[in-house]
Image (cartoon, rainbow, N blue to C red; front, side):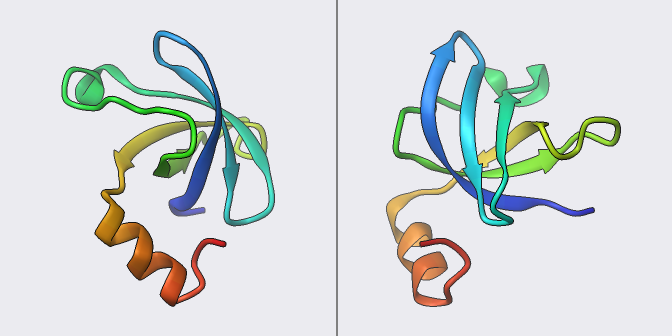
Amino acid sequence: MGEVAGEVLQVLGYTRMKVKCSDGKERLCRIPGRVRWRMRVHEGDFVLVEPWEIEKDTKGDVIWRYVPNDVEWLKARRYVK
């Protein structure tokens, strides 16, 4: 399975958050160390999630945060609601 777009529902602390993904699943996600220092994520932000191989339906890594122009593009093409 590849990456999916999603909206941050709740920031749970430090690097963990609940994300509603475009495939209809809600995942507990984290920001991995390789991107942690350059990414700040808040509730309502749209992110790119890479589901884990083992618990792909419930957990994932946030690998990108979309800027407002990108979010408009995603909404126009119906990747996110």
